[in-house]
Image (cartoon, rainbow, N blue to C red; front, side, top):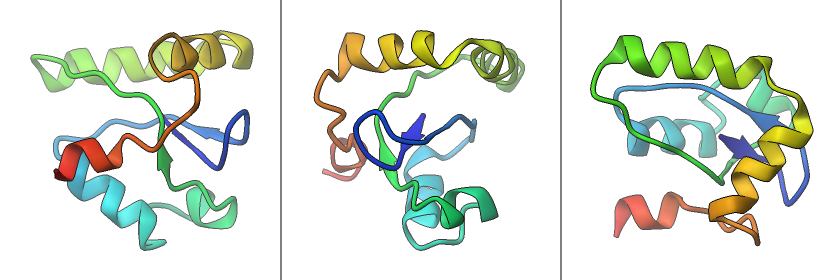
Length: 89
């Protein structure tokens, strides 16, 4: 999940190359929605064994209420730090 800031606009997506996809979002080449809302901060992610598993998880997360997504993010990242830095170091 990406966010514009702590408790800001949240975007959920899936990709086969997380570091590359986040870089695209940071360069405003990710999607119109993320560009429009300045959503560039990677605040939560998980890995899956198959693309089908990742797609199903993304669909499930998108159905959840905002409060549940915030709780999920804060369970591993209470300060909403940008986790992109952990991918590229």
